[in-house]
Image 1 (cartoon, helix red, strand yellow):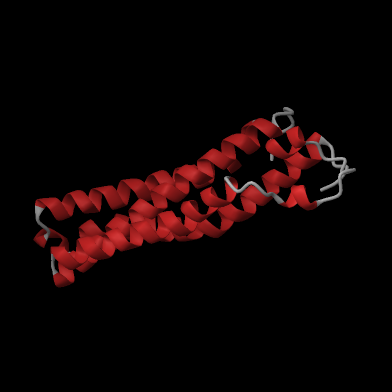
Image 2 (cartoon, rainbow, N blue to C red):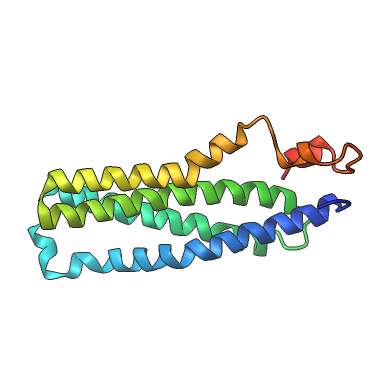
Length: 171
């Protein structure tokens, strides 16, 4: 936005990050809660050791994702009115990336475990691998390619823009 102060930009960026986290956190928490109940079901005892390790990875990565998506809100409470919004925005962005990676791992391994249980390891591992690749491509790969593009939306604006390149790099 033109003519916004550093504080206004930090506020806007933080609100945008929290809105994105709200979308993911509900799904992460439902997945995490479901995974917490699985060991108490009757079929869990039939899992072999490799499948138990898959379950472990799915459960722990769901917990990591949940922690990462909740961290910005918790830190905002601790840092409230301390003038640290830009630090909080940078940190929250990192938590969002780590949370999304952990969510991708949890979704892929949980699906892999179920498909393995129902149809065997070959289809389970194939499906899990495809889901992991799809998540990495759609969530990170495409965005990484856009970050490295020579053209940015600001390149097409008028030369008299009041937004400096150093301001854009902090967003």
